[in-house]
Length: 204
Figure 1 (tube, helix red, strand yellow):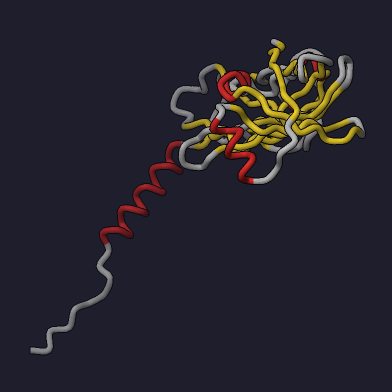
Figure 2 (cartoon, one colour):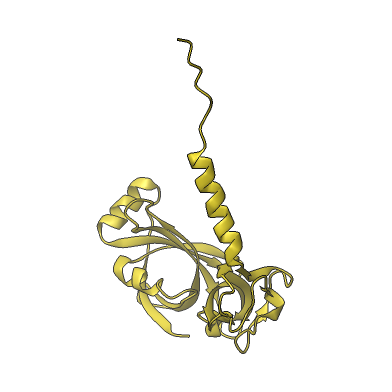
């Protein structure tokens, strides 16, 4: 996986007012924690951090105040619910060679059997354990030739080299939903919408 280098500055002001001032400077308030160390309160360049976070579980190399470099991965990202800009980010301190538990996005490939229906993605991600500096960007699940009613469990998914499953092995990752089930549900909804709410009594 790629490593993104960012310059971080130590921040000494806290609270909502301080956070707003930091964001007005096109920076993002960040907390770096892990390995039993005291949390470090930092600010990072907003645009560069936003671009970095487009890669799931991106490995970030932080140069703090132009000095020591630390490695980290995103642990929690808070965005403005309306405008979508970054409000606050928690970063987890990691070391080369260390294994971490992370959520990996699930990507499907292939074509199901003709007329089998639709693929329902039950889990959008899988929890895996991988080396901090070699976290896979995604896990690919093949649906090639699957028939209606078929399911793929977490234990059946072939993980990238160096990654191991950390979540529930029996969890359903995806299933193939039969088309008739979809059609009957739509027909029932249409019938309910068309059904009269009650009889009208003519008193005249």
